[in-house]
Amino acid sequence: MPRLEIAEDGFRLDDRPFRILSGGLHYFRVHPQQWADRLRKARLLGLNTVETYVPWNLHAPRPGEFRMDAGLDLPRFLDLAAAEGLHVLLRPGPYICAEWEGGGLPSWLLTEEDIELRSRDPRFLAAVDAYLAALLPPLKPYLSTAGGPVIAVQLENEYGAFGEDTGYLADLAGLLRTHGVDVPLFTCDQPGDLARGGLDGVLRTVNLGSRVEAGLDALRRHQPTGPLMCSEFWIGWFDRWGAAHTTRDAADAAADLDRLLTAGACVNIYMLHGGTNFGFTNGANDKGTYRPTVTSYDYDALLDEAGDPTPKYEAFRAVIARHAPVPDGTAPAVARAPKLAPATVELDHCASLFAQEHLFGETVRADRPLTMERLGQSFGFVLYEAALPAAGPTVLRIDEVRDRAQVFVDGQPVGVLEREHHEHALAFTSPGPGARLAVLVENQGRVNYGPGIHDRKGLLGRVTANGERLTDWGSRPLPLDCLDGIAFAPAVPLVGPAFHRGSFEIDRPADGHLALDGWTKGHVWINDFPLGRYWSRGPQATLYVPAPVLRPGRNEITVLELHASSVRTVELRDRPDPGPTQD
Image 1: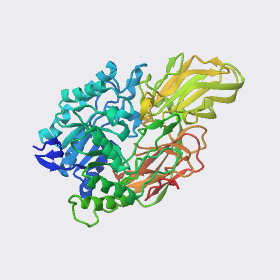
Image 2: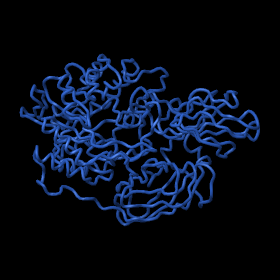
Image 3: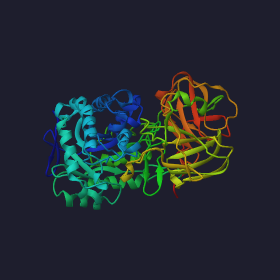
Image 4: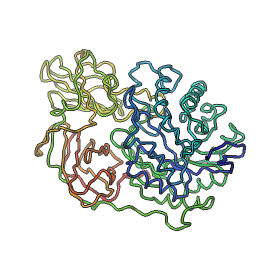
């Protein structure tokens, strides 16, 4: 059975020198019917390994539950990797960052008010223990020591950028071993964090996107012998709402790959294929200002969001061919897949969100607004309601909005408060005592990096009207994880958030991209599959439509528009529009 060994001069597999040539491919960001295609393209690039994180929050949506089915069928993904002759680097966290909601940490951890995540807090370690006890035993046959494709497992993720408690890392290493991991462990950190993020006896690796020689030198200073490995070679970057689309020149990235390989290093290309933050799964960053990540995780990768080769794919393949065998020599490896024909779809039925609110959750009464976590909710919205105490000019003040609040009085919109813009107060005129105040709060993505990962959602702290605290609240969870039962009617103008629905016919499913020109902000489903968020703020201007979510014949599009639209149509296109790039 193949076993990866760490020698003074590098890796050995089956007692022969082995160089890891890997690419990042997150199974949870790719439709499961497309896994085999993406893995084949990894092999054709010349890679011998793929890397994937494991999102704890999706596998364990609630305490005591664990899922490994459908798009979370990790054993099937590993089987497909093995069928392509690919090894796997498994990165189970518990924290993964990945620009993923909460860095992969489940939101229910935050029901403990003072819990310290990524620490030796007994409550956190007990939850990690339960997670690994559910995750790892079914994966035991997939470890290379049992003849499977997983040759190494990562311990935590870039911990040196967060803390320096080696006792915590040792506890995690012990849990991995207790639950059956008997392949090599490794840590990964940026060059300046290698000292804080490492653990004696565990292989250190470095993450970088440039300054290759300096990064490898830093790794050698902390680890004088053993394999040189870059576990994340950043070849692009992620986008956030309101900024430009980030790109990196293919030749520049390929030149740095050549430097890594010429130095004898192993590499994991981040990303081979980024995929998509389907539904509500994108993360966010907060370094003084909250910045949510867009739906696309294209990452300017080697394969674009639809799995088609980009210029980087062939540029990297040419570099790899100078250092290792590449299938089919210098012939082009893969072609662009067929796409949907462009079409315009009319959304001719609609339904008010507020008229359907009873479908999604029960109102909970309390003397204050309850956070999403207290409501047992991870994703989506919460609708808060209270009565205003008096008529006349009113200043509403909210201590913390997490993350975007649309405010209504007797059903009429009166304004928006955004965490991103540090907004806390709104002025309007109350029609009278007892007027209905409704605040629709969107979780735009939990922070995935740094101390901000303790990111509870909803309305936090005090809410006052003209300085008087509002104390009688209804909090209704709106996770929008099922759209069954919505009462659609022929489209008429509606005030406030509303669902819009229409249908289109196709002969044969193919990948496509959905454009929402004229719409403002919201979410889209096709055949009840959640494509993700859209926002006229950009840069992302289209949403990826995977072929497997479509069917021959009639297909249904549902759009939740949070504000208003100047049109009643959306467009299917054959190419993505990731938005303008930075000059």
